[in-house]
Image 1: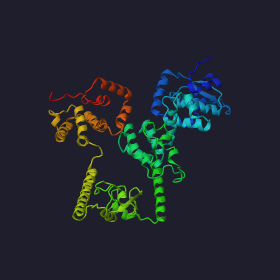
Image 2: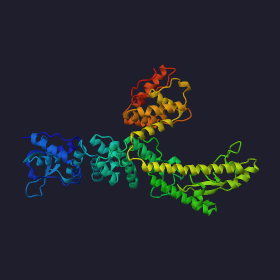
Image 3: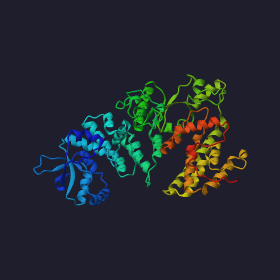
Image 4: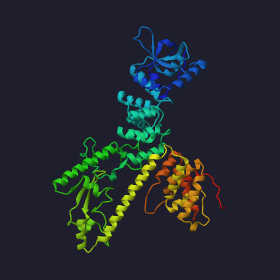
Length: 548
């Protein structure tokens, strides 16, 4: 008596190579596999699902035979499960006596390959199980990514993505297995190369909340906090000797352009995804510059003196200027370097926060040179007035920071509706005038006399209408304030609609179709009034326009 068995695509070759025979085996003669692939999967079984499966088997029996191989070393005929362990466990729980099985005489290698392909093709396979299976195929059986992709009928990008999950640290893996994180979260965190940074990012994403940041929000956060533009690096990115183990940035695997399958969402190829390595290179570059500066007898300002001169960074120096700064007392507004030339040698200032070195010139050294050129910088009473204003501003900053800290200390762990109203009102009021007008138009909060409407009118309208929104409408309003700045397109800038594109990708909106539709509409409409893009408009509630 023969039975046909449906086997996954990737194991049909093995089933053909080693034909099997059907049998009904006593459950007592079957035992689970100790091959690592199956042992890993067993640890992730959902016991509740298994119990429910057992109840089903009590009623219907086992429909699809399990796959086993005989263990000839044992004196009593016993069989090792190659595929179908859940069916065997559920049958045991249902107190059945035997189970249908296809018996194949497989070697250890054939059995493990069968299990790997069987497990990673299951609908309920955990992505980490898939990743571990891919890794075993590559490391132990010399598969390439292309071969795995072909046998499974998956894209190479899919296989690369699963393999990248193996770089997750233990804390992130645990959260992923406990379903605190989605696959999208895990793939984003896997791109962070350092374990300490992965742990920090995990805490930021979860932040003690019931639900983590959304994947789109996570992607934006990680891009801001853990990705650095190589174009902004003060060190030489082509230098292979700064950190010998890291090599040059251009060929580094942690550069986005060198892993296009993993960083399709990142616009630039020249982005570093390892802030720790970036900081090490910056530190090595600074150390090298300091050695060269000392050897050449240059003045170096460090420690407390540097903190006094640059308490708020290189753009707010006290008593010093950078050679590249423009002199506003000069009618031609030339740089200090152009005005001073070689008359004054710049010193090197080590910035307290970043440790980077910048060239600076003391105002006391610059003033006599400027005076010789007929340029008079503010002095005397005017300079004293500036110092007084700085002191006043500094005192006000300290006071406001105290207010800020006091509010933070007493703020609740979760935002209440009153807090959200305040955030929405402040967020909208800080938009530019035209963007505020656009948001108000989207919501149908128009003015009777739009031409004479002022910022004060906008403020009153926002403060009146926002508290009346439902919770769902308030959420939409906040998102509108996030996306609204990207409605503005300048003839002098090539900025991208990054947030809108990210939202469209998350919401599965066809951006190319929208582009075609909008350009066609423009061709037929010579003079159009403001109308937000459909991708933004489709989320808007249909509110009645008052005053009409």
